[in-house]
Picture 1 (cartoon, rainbow, N blue to C red):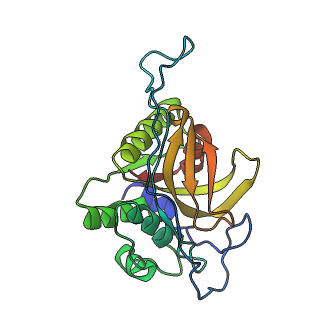
Picture 2 (cartoon, rainbow, N blue to C red; picture 1 turned 180 degrees about the horizontal axis):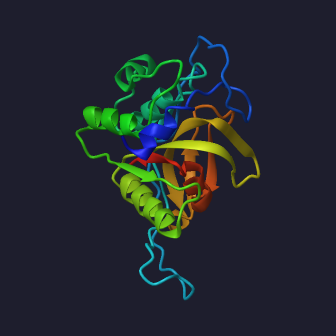
Length: 224
């Protein structure tokens, strides 16, 4: 069994509370979907003299999604997967996605499951990448950058399995000590900034630096 499957089974259930992720009673109603414009934004970036040799110069792209919050404390996996599917014209009910993922009140096992379901529904182009250590190595951060840029440029959001606390670019902390799933739906500045659609966040979407996202994924993995 891979490291990702061993570790993520322990903590993937999320309660919809501001800034936190704890086990609690399920709620019953889905939030109304919020649809972002299905328009991508791209601009050429010529770089500057401080750019590292070989660094990817793609500058900016955002995918149109149908955002929908998770309706209970353990549906973060189905909700994040559904958000990714919505960008590809497959906005399925979360209950249907949860059944395919094998989600229970213990949560969704790992990114291996989100990859499997995304491939079943979109034709088999997703793969799972693990960040096995407690902190992402520089090469793993670079790999995440490339995977996000490539996947988003192809119209496929990335689904990430994360754990712990990270702070977005507005200074707001997002704490999921029990584990969580969220969707990476865009990038800026050649991937230095990542746009996150978070099914448990009150504001729905926010920006975070690439390195913080990579360290959030550490000891888990992502589907791209």
